[in-house]
Image (cartoon, rainbow, N blue to C red; front, side, top):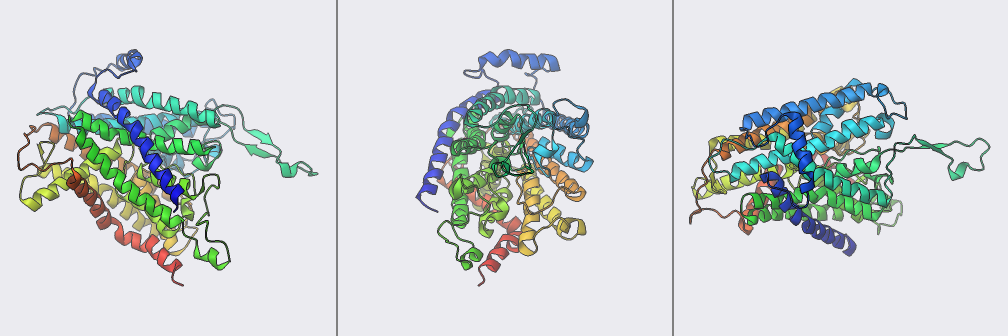
Length: 572
């Protein structure tokens, strides 16, 4: 870790903060139903959507109706994505003449993209037609991101409301989030990426003659994949989706060609999650609340990023024994055009923000370097987290924090004037414990079964880490892979498909129930005994709650994986 790495991290956070503040104000307008500054010309499109769907956006919904509508919407989306994959051989925009995707892979991919996970057990350019990429997968990149924003808006309304039975209108939230936020930002980023060299076409794959084959008597051509990549890449980052058009994901020069595109993609990943913190402050009428949440996320992120940067700055002992210069650090699995600093920052960003895009091979990280992205996911994807899901996850931890503080001082806990009572804590417990249960149970089943072990390419602690990473990525809706695990099998496609669905909606339903409970309560006035939730003490308490739950849930599993591998590696 050197001065360049620290400067890159500092500049990255400054740019994210500078862009997130005004975007947060815009998101607050979207969430409160007000006119959106500068985007009023899109209002007719919004009204047209309501008219076609027969929806009254002003009609409020209770949390149960809101949850059922979301489940139905995403369930139908999963069926559509599954059908497109199975039928792509008969659908247009298929210059590669690709046939149907296998049933188990289609099942996994459908659930994965609908849940904002984008776990990919296949090579994109060899499996998916342009139609499948543009219509099925890109469509769900928008809709899954809008789902996350809708849920966090519902929870914020519950905290801000004064004895209301409504948490908002799900159709209005989905439409407004897509039209006023996701589409404009994705368009701007797509144009920028195209200017950097990201391709955007529907041309057939090209055959090229490599330079080393020019003088050959029997030259062998190379197939170069084409496709509408810039448009897919934009929403992949803006929506914290992470699914790559190409198998190499953001390490591919057609997805991420320059150092500037790499930096812009990292900023795009954090942009909406960070902005939602400020939108939260604006919507509850106290910007200090949003700043406190942002501060807790930023502190955790900086600490974890410094950890992975330090770990990858170390040389692998095996290379040192071969006489390889250790000054460069661990360059294995990294793009030389980005280097260690940009690759490790990208790894931290993508796993902190539930994106799952990668520009380096996580399987090649040092053991403690690999522990950082693993732990960032296991914190519950709340260190900025996914679009919407990061903030509602962190607000759940905020409620847990004030509950713990209330127990310590013998007072009924309150957050933003709302009493946190028995029912609320049951929903908090459900939302927090669903993903660890899915991760640990899934990992246990995989390591205890022949089908689970059959996909391993590495034995011992590293192989265990690969399985643990896969289930942590799936259940926390991240989508990145440690690699080294052959996961495109009926066993893993089924297991991980179930994990992504439970990890998404097993959290969303309790969060919406919590929103309904909070909305129905009166908002109490601040008194001398009210715990402030906007200062350094609360930020510390919030960070402690996130770390405490992560430590209690996952330390034994981490000890069997990356920690054991580290001790073995440096034993001699």
